[in-house]
Length: 465
Ligand code: 4AD
Ligand code: MG
Image 1: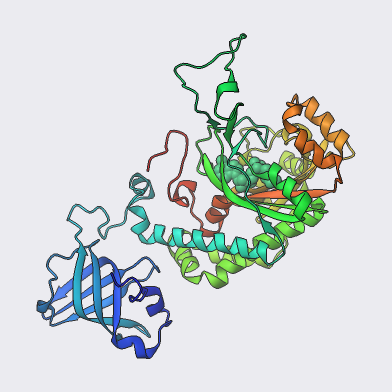
Image 2: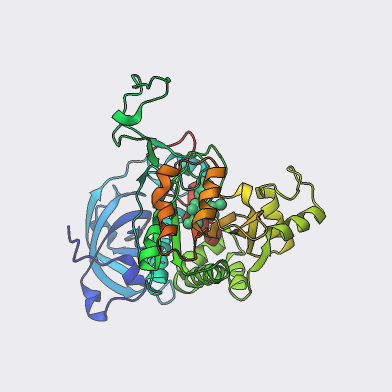
């Protein structure tokens, strides 16, 4: 199939091939458009390596089998490269041989007209071939790669936390259950509850909501670690920023306190923004033109300013004084709703903010208790439009205080003995956070629905494809 011989269109258009190779070029790709006039024809060919198409020129066009070619047809073309006259500093391929690999009949849905994002979600198997979803998927790959680079170059080890787990890290009860029991014939204990001893793992198991607890295990052995993988939440929130399966980056640092971690968060996010502006120019130019005209400026402004850092208590004071009608009334102790988060970051500060020291009642069991006995060393990073992109905390490293809190929350202590052991043997202050990968993609691209930055989104009522 000339897999190794062919040139990728990205390399041709970005001048990554030498002049000696110009005479003998093979490309493989899909037709975007075809234009035929007397004696000459043009095809815009896309091979997925870049947003941009290669122009193929057919001189003496009647010699080529062009009639059966339409949008979506897959082709092999052999020819030679020449500077294109029409376009500045660009190359076009003068065709010598044309092979049709696969037809695309006229009912192919991706003709030239623009489709709505809602419609494209219905054809998630074809939408990667559109400009927008090509760009999104290439950018997803690049951003994932650069996240690894950030941590690897700073001495963090990439660890794999389990997907199947018996602990609910966030304690929110959002676990998807994993079982091989016959749901039509469940084994029951004497009290009528399901008897899991005959289930596959011998206990009730589920899909992980977070790799954090296992990351703490590795951090208290290797120092600095991070996970980067899929996480699952059976929360019934049908919003534009919740998915039931999403990817999370979870760094965990031993000997690190909350303020130090906030410096890492800010440095990390700015690194991703800088990378996007400097190294993913094709994608950023596309987002800025087609998705949100402010994107490049917003990212540039963020890089050059400090993130705002405030406590939850200060945030509540701002909200109480705010000149805005909130659906959920504000008072100290409430969980901040997305309308409150948006007010703070979009209206009040107009930039990313980090809110710390939330009431312990609304946060997870593992967060470090402050001396006031009321708040914990939590941090949420909020950004305009998307809201929360990062949640994290300094961890409770004092054995007895953690144990008391777990008991107060009526957790099954036996099941978390291993987690308590980390505090029993050589405990250290440590901190970590989780970045929602899909949400940072939304933020950088300006895409407004999480369903459009994940190739195959899973949301309540939808697991198609
Ligand atoms: O705030 P969360 O629930 O924190 C944790 O899971 C901690 N264990 C992280 C840690 O400290 N290691 O989730 C972290 C981030 C959120 O800020 C959000 O960006 C993203 O994960 N997230 C979701 N993204 C998409 N869909 C959902 N349903 C999400 N839930 C959380
Ligand atoms: Mg959170």
